[in-house]
Length: 562
Image 1 (tube, rainbow, N blue to C red):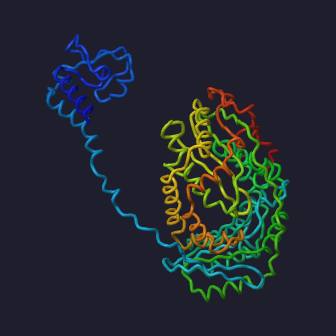
Image 2 (spheres, rainbow, N blue to C red; image 1 turned 90 degrees about the horizontal axis):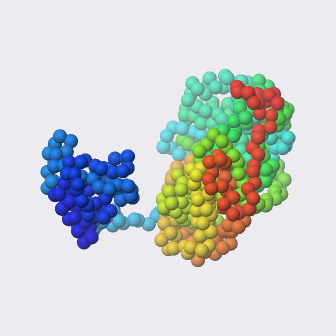
Image 3 (cartoon, helix red, strand yellow; image 1 turned 120 degrees about the vertical axis):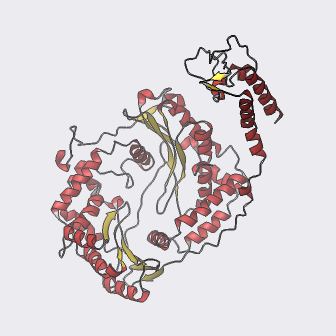
């Protein structure tokens, strides 16, 4: 306070002599005035303004600057200038002394977490139904989740699930083709969609309550009696081929895809990628065979919305109870090995930035350490207050996006992934900073403040993750699909609340091993100065992302282009 006031007083005296503050006066707090009518004299070509104190202090080429009593055609009162400067310098000090009333607002304890669970019904054939009443709006939505996805497809036909998900809906049924179905649904503002993922496919629908019976009938017909059409399959292939030949356009897409390959292997069930040759080999018979095989699995049918439970249950029993008993799929025996440590590089000449991915093997949600690691994730890279954000972005200004942590798969290990997006010239510095924060999990002690903030962030997020009955239903279906207990969310929340600093320290020692991580950089090689070799982590391993069979000419690609 005393220093600030004395500095302000010195500036006031300078103003009285005709000086404009923001020049060499601020460096030396003394100056001479050879010419009283010069606005500024400096060897720098950039103008110096009276408010740009920091630049004037940091620019040694600026010698002095003066102002006359009259400036820009108007008379400036020296006393007004002095008062304004004094107030500006004094304001931050006064504000710091003021109380912050928002810090006194009491924060109530979170309510006990007991979301309204849907009603579960298991039919005699093994199919499971979930009914979630919600009378807030006159809508009804539903879905059928079917086991089996891209991880189960023949590698020689990689991409089959994507084609299946498109052609299933667009082909329609024997009673109504896809175009006619579009017209009916559009007139009712209703939807029926199909799609696939790595472990499942699904059919979903939604409509106004008044139209729900008709829309459900259309969806059920599409589920039981699809009519796959060759023209629709060819269109799906063209769309898929377009995506394949353009998959290297986006730097982030490349980084995410290739980072997963480093962890799971380039041709594993979770990283296998469609190629033009593999989608070209898919036939209508393949789609039909896939459909017939997978709908005999353990289906999960879920309904949410404005319905009467007894009548809806009766309707679903009529539709699904006559189907054959579900077949248990064979157990999976996937083998996972962590990424080979080292530095991997993908050159992308049309960018001026680098995408840095530090990756390794994660865990699955059956692991009892998941609650502790969820808190550790929040501390490392979960938000604005995380260590990665505060160090790499805020303190060092090396990245405009950074974060990361250990992910948890439901039935297979997730990945460890820490990310930073940075300018080409700061690639090495950013990578070192990220690696330093990861290593710091084992060297920089966790604090009670970090623990409390991280737990609050996670627990408060429940308010938004499960704030509707639809979201609760979706989570319940997910838990059923992967074989988790119905009260998993409640027990998970309870475990989060019990995490301690000692738990974090033990988990970091158990799971955080910087020497076992791989570093992937996607960026413009010639612009990365200093080079990646200065990371001193061994030789740089280039990754080839050439797309087999991709046409060199521009224009819409087709699967037959190869």
